[in-house]
Amino acid sequence: MAVGIKVFAPASVANVACGYDVLGFALEEPGDEIVITKVDKKGLRITKITGGKLPYDPLKNTAGFAALKVLEHLEYDGGLEMEIHKKMPFGSGLGSSAASAVAGAMAVNEVLNKPLTKQELLPFAVLGEQIADGAYHADNVAPSLLGGMVLIRDTQTLDFHKVYIPDGLYVVVIHPHIEILTKDSRGILKTEVSLADHIKQSANLAGLMLGMQNSNFELIKNSLEDIIIEPQRAHLIPHFYDIKNAALTNGALGCSISGAGPSIFALCDSTIIAENVAIQMEKVLLDQKISCTIYKSRINNEGAILC
Amino acid sequence: MAVGIKVFAPASVANVACGYDVLGFALEEPGDEIVITKVDKKGLRITKITGGKLPYDPLKNTAGFAALKVLEHLEYDGGLEMEIHKKMPFGSGLGSSAASAVAGAMAVNEVLNKPLTKQELLPFAVLGEQIADGAYHADNVAPSLLGGMVLIRDTQTLDFHKVYIPDGLYVVVIHPHIEILTKDSRGILKTEVSLADHIKQSANLAGLMLGMQNSNFELIKNSLEDIIIEPQRAHLIPHFYDIKNAALTNGALGCSISGAGPSIFALCDSTIIAENVAIQMEKVLLDQKISCTIYKSRINNEGAILC
Image (cartoon, rainbow over all chains, first blue to last red; front, side):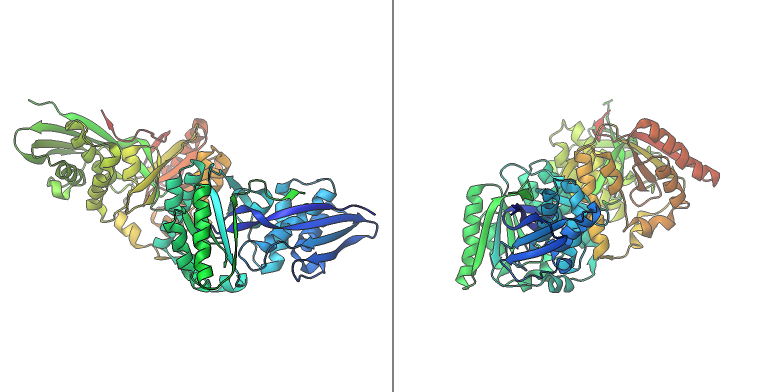
C-alpha cells in the first residue's frame, strides 16, 4: 500500500487592527493536517475527514477545491486520496477554511514533487477558501501558506509583500467558545467610511509597516488601532472590551478582533508580558463562565510545511 | 549695525498619491528665505517682504506667527527684525505657507543659538501654517522642517516618522501657472469614502512604506495610486490626465497632484528618466500655451537650513 505524505497549514490572524482585508500573520498553532496518497484509481477523492463535519465532494470542500485547481493547472490525471484532519475550530476567526485550502493545495504539490513554488500555489489556495465564505481575499491564505506577516497590496493580482518581524514580538490569541459566521460578520459592516477615519486608519497602517520594518515597538503600539471595523463588530463578541482592556492594561502593544471574530489577538513585546496578558484575558472569560482556548507563540515565519 | 542670520526652508510635496494628509516630502528647491536680526527695540517686527504681498503684522503672517509662538515658548522679550523673501509661488500646491512658517520658526531659534531642536520647533511651525489655510496639518511643515519623506501618523500629537529614501529616487515637479486656492480645493472633497476604496488606498499606502523601506521600485510604482482624492480634484487642473499620462508612459514610477494642486509631481528611479519625464510633462502644457516652472531634484533629506 502506498504511504501518504502529510502537510500542516497553520491558523492565521487577519485584519490585524488597522489592516482590514489586507494584512494577516500566521500562528504556530493550531492548524490543519492533510494526508495525501497516490493511488491507481484516477481522480481526487476525499476518503477521511476528522475534527469536523465537511463535504466529501472535492468540488464543495475548500481543501479539495484548492487541490483540484492545482491538479487542473498541472494537467495531472492520476489518482489521489486525501485525508483531512481539522485540528482547529470552525468559525473562530483564525482562518480555518484558509488553512484547509492551503493544506489542500500544498499537499498535492508535495506529492507531485513540488512542480510549483509556494508563491505559485497562492491563487489556487485563495480559490479554495472562496468556496467557504464566498469572498475573494488572501489575508488568511497568504500568511498560512507563506508564513510571517503579509500585506496583500492588491487582492485581484495577489500582489503580496512579507513584512519584517521584529525579534521579541509575541502573539496571544484567545478563542472564546462561541460562534460567529464570517458572512454575518461581514454583512453588518457599513459600506462607507468617513474621510477623517480613512485618513487616521491608513496612517496607522502605514505606521505599523514602519514600526515592524524598524523594530520600533512604540510605533507598533501606537499604530495598532482599528477605528473602522472593530467598533462595528465588537458587540458580536461578549465582553470584548473587557478582554481588550485586560490585554492593554497588562502591557500588550495592541489587541483587536482576529479576522471576523470571535477570537481576539494581542501582540506583545516579550514572552513574560505575553504570558501575563494571556492569563488576564482568559480570566475575563472564565469569570463569565465562558470557556476558551488560548494560543501563545511567535509569529510563524514558515507557514505551511511538509510534516 | 547688527548682522542678520539667514535661513532657508524648502517647498514640499504633500499627499503623495495614496498619502492624503499624512505623507509629504521636501524638495531641494524652490523655498523661502528669512533673515532675522537682533535689535534693541523690543518685540518682533517684519521689516521687509519680497516676492509676494503678505501681511506685515506678525500675528497675521505665517512666518511671523510661527516665530512669535517660538518666542512666547522661550519667554524671549528682546527685539527682532525679520525680512521675508518669498522665493516660491503662492497657491502652487508646493507648501508655500508651510515653508514660510518653518523658516520663521527656524530663524528665531537660530538667532537665539538653537535652544530648541528641529523636532521641538514642529508644533510652532504647524501653528504658523494654520494661520494661512485654517487647517491643522503637518504634511508640508514636517518635511520642510525635517527633510526627507515624513509620515504624520497622528496629526494631533504630531507623531511623525521619517521614511527611508532609496538611492536613485528622483522627483519632477511641474507648476502650471494657474492658481487654485487650497481652501477651495479642500471644500470640494466628499466627506465619505467607500469601504472598498479605503481598503485599496490604505493597502497602497502600506505598500509605499514597504517599497521605500526596502528600495523596491516596482512596489513603489504599483503603490503610487490615488483613487480617492485625485479623481475629485483632477478637473481643477487643466490637462491633468494628459500630463500624468506623459509622465507614466515615459517611465515615471507614479504621478499625482502635489498638495492641493495645481502642481503635479512625478517620482522616477533615475535622473535620465526624470529628465525625459520633465520634458514630456512640460510639452503638454506648452502645447496648450500654458506656461509652467519645472523643478527636478532628489528628495531633500536636510529640510530647513541655516544659509
